[in-house]
Length: 67
Image (tube, rainbow, N blue to C red; front, side):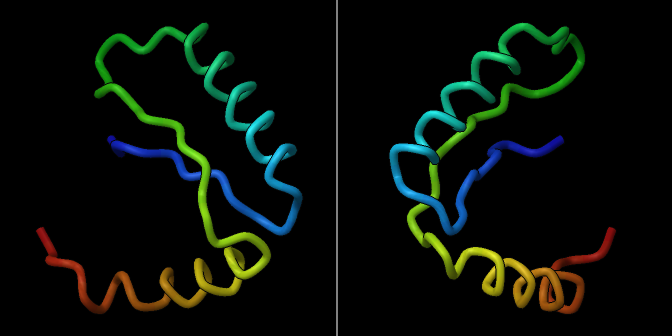
């Protein structure tokens, strides 16, 4: 399970906020029995979110503890 869904991207802040609100509302309608509560939040990076996320996804396996 994950704790947070972060919504960000290269679109205006009002669009991002509406998207966060709609995803939150839809998530609230789902059967979440058996999973941890999830926080759905708005990011702050903007249009650089995609390349930063791509760079991070390459680094995470190398620096995350392995089970």
